[in-house]
Image (cartoon, rainbow, N blue to C red; front, top):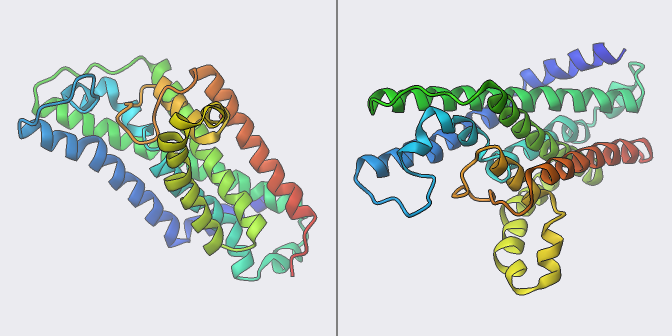
Length: 275
């Protein structure tokens, strides 16, 4: 029953044009801010700030994994939130929950199928971003006559795995919002406000002024996601990427939020009216 439901959810996700648009936006943002703009500055002779990740070395193969996952804490993470909302929230907007459940599966089975779909979709997004980043790095290296020195395979796998973990956490957050607010529009809006505004205001304005908010930052999902991808090679010039905590702690906190979001969404779905 679970496998058949996962196949059905994957088929629905593949036929939803919005999901493909999210992937296209993620690729475009990654290429633009990790390669096109930095290379335009480099080719135009713009001086690179000291200790910046935006110079030529930041566009070569050794840095490709960091470039691929650097957007996960904020920009690609926001797209992952939208993905999670769409996978779960469209059942509310289309009023199809009762139709789905009438086929026989339990709420837990359907929700688990949706989480599995989210996991597959975020893995696909992470792999596509890694492949695109590798291709762009190869092109830059060829144009600039630089060697193709790829990082060790273990570092590549760790970086891709860490990026997937962050994307999956944010997508699970979106799924939880969809269950809480029983729809799509409001969960998407609130999720984007948190990722693109609130957590950046906390980090950039509130934390330097208030000690307890600075301490609170150490346990929030955004700063830990940024610390995790920073530990795996993402440049700290990228918004949301900073070494607030160590990589090990960041991985544990992100994984804990992932489990908390997923479990909370399933618990709430099992106890609310679907009318």
